Image (tube, rainbow, N blue to C red; front, top):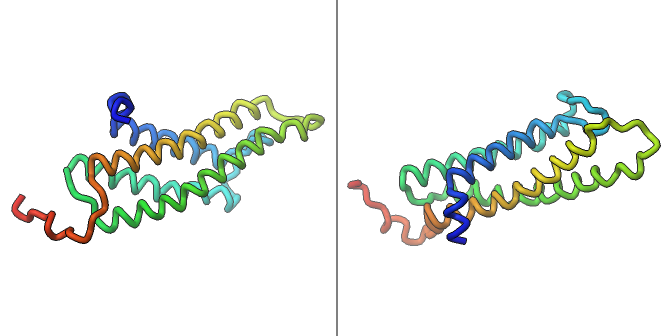
Length: 160
């Protein structure tokens, strides 16, 4: 894991996560069957809302690493919410694969030429996102520290 952390530093991981999340937010409004963007469907806003929690966690990790701070209960709570969001990410992988495989069922219908590339891109991005997220958890543990709040007050040095 240490050789991976030399290649993919914590900054590269966070920037890659931001790029993947931003791309997936744009793709969440895109309809692969119709080759149009749908901004009025309420279902399309679920992923951007969940991604905002992910963006918040990435900001907190960036801040904690750059300022050399200890983890706090708020950071832990955001990470626990992100654990639950990971289940949604896994569902989105399944859903994207199902959409990609549905081309066989709709073979006689007119499907845009962008269907296969965009559906494949969304499968790849949704598959990369949990890997980057788990790697961010590992980086948090390595650079920020573990969540040990039993002796939290002993680790504080107010004179620094």
